[in-house]
Image (cartoon, rainbow, N blue to C red; front, side, top):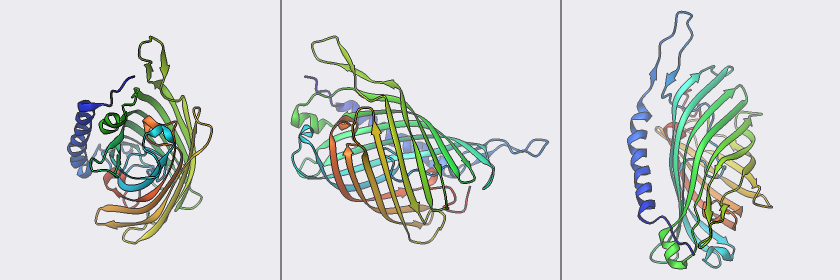
Amino acid sequence: MRAHGGGIGTRRTLAATLLGLVLVAGPAAGQQMETGSDATGREGARWFPDRFVAAPFLAVSREVRLQGGFLSAERDGKSGYSGRNVEAEVSVGYRIPVVRLADGGRDGVSVDLGFEVGTWSRFYMENSTRDLVGIDYRVGAPLGLRWKRLEGRLTLHHTSAHLGDDYVDRFDVPAYQVSREALELIVAVRPVAPIRLYGGGEWNVGRGSDFEPGTSETFRTVEQWIARFGAEFDASASSPGTVRPFAAVNFETTDWTDRLATQARAGVAFRVRSIRILLDAQWRDGPSTLGQFRTVDESAFGVGMEVQLGGLIPPGAMGGR
């Protein structure tokens, strides 16, 4: 039985990720460089613009964001913890718009390329040790497009998942390598400005594999594809300085699961200077969002807060492009 939960390596990786966020996000938030126009008057590439052309998705699982909250969660018997438990989930991530390749304004075609990095940590809160249940990592390069009412995002990303040291020590469970490299495509339309409907999915171009102890036979540890669709209502995205409601629901399925995973959130959003804050209630049902528990059914509800700044803020939220 294998029991490698990440140990010191997991903590070092998390520390390096947090340090990278501090070093990169700080200068990028205030820096904007442009090339000059050529002889025909056409504008060249614009480096480090203030916004992405496509807004981040509110309820898509493992969307890079800065968020924290408490959940009342229950997983089936495979998870080790029995019954419904109080857990905390913390997402630490940042998205940086690196270059605006085309800027067509409201009616033309706008294209950009960015960089994103994020971690998601889940903690069991009903004992004094506050067990780290699991932690997931993501790093990617999103290519965004906006044209009139249409938005799209194509992201090449790497994702990996690890059981927490506390969880492995408590239950002595096998921890398999779970990692993948995927192409994620999401296409959206806005019938009216506050409403967005979307659909898409991911195709894993590289999938992690592992082996049973004492054998040389390997097996895949992640699915081949993910399909998703959903809807959002965000009245405050283009209304700075006001408290407005938002709501979003996302549905996902994979070739490894036989039912939809549902994730919904609703609440209010408002802005404090250059920061947008979202206070919400959340509900989840279906295969867990935790990578190491991807085939384990989970139901959860709770409350949380998300902080949007820099490249995390939807386009137009503060009047900028």
